Length: 118
Image 1: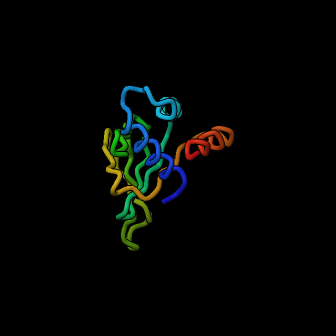
Image 2: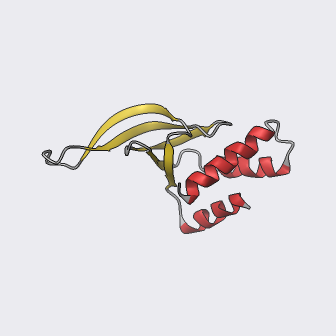
Image 3: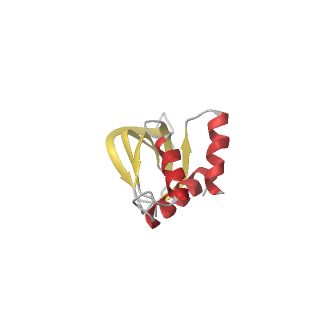
């Protein structure tokens, strides 16, 4: 699991401890997650598929909801294109299936997101 996915799991586990925002750490993490709203996110899952969509939300268990999502998966070698894609729309990706998570943002934003783990 890469660094972005670990951050998402850290955020979801911290937020689950206090849903009213009374915990300062929780409030800080929630504000950082809000900055990710409506950004493009690429999520990989255990069976090798990838989903590219707009980050919509994350719940206390770490499940991610993407909207306007496109699924990418490998096809047989006989196909002219090695990847097949299809439009899915709104999907939920369970945290138990997720292997990677990448957010489209600048270098400065990536560095600030690394502070989520502190």
